[in-house]
Length: 82
Length: 82
Length: 147
Length: 147
Image 1 (cartoon, helix red, strand yellow):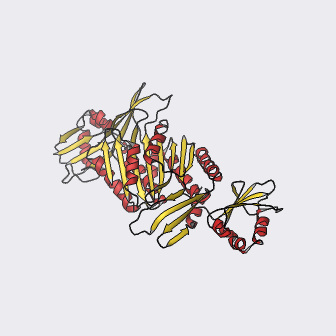
Image 2 (cartoon, rainbow over the protein chains, first blue to last red):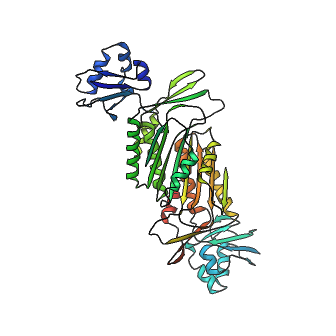
Image 3 (cartoon, each protein chain N blue to C red):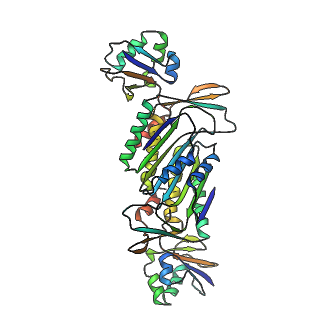
C-alpha cells in the first residue's frame, strides 16, 4: 500500500487530497498508467505529464523513479512559492 | 578665493580640515602645483595623485577640471563607505 | 538556521532585528520580503497558499543548508506562510548573514530562486471574476540555471 | 526616497518594517545592513567614520535616484552613520522596493557598490595596536564595472 497525495489543481481534478493505493507498479510511471485506467478524472489529471511534478517519500524526483520500498508518492503542478 | 577641504589622511598630513586659498589656478592640477610649492606637508600630501580623489563644488571630478567659478575644492583618499 | 512554515503573520521588523542582533560577527545581512501586491486597480481579493506539510519543511531546510554551505554563511532564516492572505500581507521572508556583502546577496537570491520553483507551495488567486491557480513562470525555472 | 546621514544609531527592525509597510503595492523588498564585525579575536576597539557634510547627502541622493530610475523602483532608503562605532553596531542600511525580486536585488547591490566607493565616507580603525585608515579595495572599484 502506498499513500498517494495530490496538490493544487491535481487534487481538484481528482477530487481528493490523498488516498491509499494498492499497487504492484514498479515505477512512478507504472503507477500513473494504473491510476489513469481507473476513471476519467484520473485520466484527465494525468493527461499531460510535462505539466506535473512528482515527489517520492517527500523528495522531488522523476516519473521513472522506482517505487521499491516507497511509502508516499505525491503529484502536483510546478511549484509557485516565494 | 576658494574653500579648500581635506579629508581623512589628507587632512591629517596637511594638518587642517579646510582653508581659504587665494589662487589664479585654472585647473585643479594647477592648484595642486601651487599647494605643493607651499610647504613640505603639502608636498607630501599630494606626492601621489593616483592615491587621491578630488571633488569640485561637492561633485567628484578629475584633476584636469576647471576652477572657473568654483567655490569649493576637496581632496581626499578613495572612499570607503558602506 | 531557522525554517518556519506557518499560517500566522510574522513581524518583519522584529525578525530582521533579531536575526541581525544574533550575528554581530558577520559584516553583511541581506533580507528579502515577498508581499501580496495591493494595487488599486487589481481585482485580487485574496491569495491562498497550499503546501505539502512535511515535505515543505524538509525542502526548505535542504535549500537553506545548501546556501549556508556554498557561501559559508553565518546563518540563514526562511519564513514562509500558507493559508489565506489578503493584498498587502507579507507572504515570506529570507535573511542571510555573511562576512561579505556579495555572499549575503548571492545566497539570498539563491534561496529565493529555489523557493520559487523547488519548495512545494502552490498559489491560488481569488478575484471578483473568479479563482485560479498561479501558473509557474518559465523565467523562474530559467533562474535556477544561474546556480 | 529617503536619505539619512546620521551619527545616532538606527532601529533596523523599525526601519525595515516601516519601509515595507509603506510599499504594499510592491511585491519585493530587499534590505542590506552593514555591521562593524564583532569577532572574539579581533583587536578592533572602534571604527570612526568621517564624511563630507553636504556632499555626502548629495552623492547618496544621486546614487539612490539613479537606482530608482534604472530599476523602476517604488522606493529606496539609505541610512548611513558617521562618527565613532563599536563592534556589533550597525553602520548603514539600504532598502529597495520593486514589483519584481530581480530588480529589488540588483538595485540594492548597485546601491551598495556605489556607496562603497562613490559616497564620501572614510573609515578609520582603532585597535589596541594603533589606528589606521581603512584602504579602499580594488575589488570594490572593480564591482562598479558590472553596472
